[in-house]
Length: 275
Image 1 (cartoon, rainbow, N blue to C red):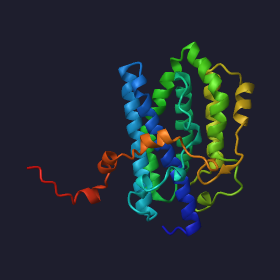
Image 2 (image 1 turned 90 degrees about the horizontal axis):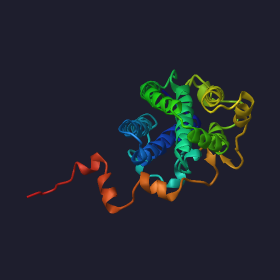
Image 3 (image 1 turned 120 degrees about the vertical axis):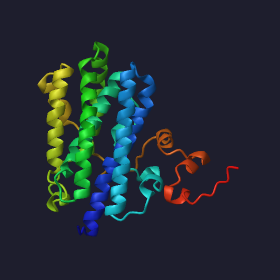
Image 4 (image 1 turned 180 degrees about the horizontal axis):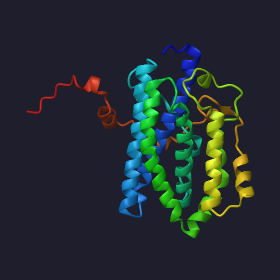
């Protein structure tokens, strides 16, 4: 499939917003694993983190092959200022209710955005999205289970966090666009505007069902988003980047870590005499 330079840059930017956000979310799940209440929760966090990081790697490899990007540079060759990660996940969860809310919002937003490519004419990407959807389905089942067992304290925590978290994830979708070149080219068959609308409808149902918010209050929350001084390519505030501590957790810079992550294409040439 022939993709001109302008469309190629737009596609790279959009896919990095998905891949980098999944990369970051996967490390969130790793971090909270030690706070698991039960073995079942720990197993869920482990599986969900493995899925998210696998999706990230798969997207990186697909972009390298299809869009002819340098091998392994997306994962190890970018600085933190070049990462297209979801701004909502910059601040760590303040409590269990806040974590449940962030996990739900991030998973729902990422899937709605990913699904725009599911029936597109870039088959390598469409096939990946179909596979991701099967794994993401189980993430949503886990989150639905957590929502059904919320304590009154957790409901209060989630309700309090909504005013801060929800506008950030709504901003991630961006303001309604007049044109969508990826949609026009058939690379996706659903526009970002429709993806945002589907996300909003789903969240409205979830908030009124599990948090006891009335429809008017939930609708008011969904109406707010902050896009001022916005970097539309990275879908986050202009000039911002994730906290240094989180970036170091994702891509450790110690000599041992650098050695361990050397690409197979390089390390396979090592000649180690063990005797």
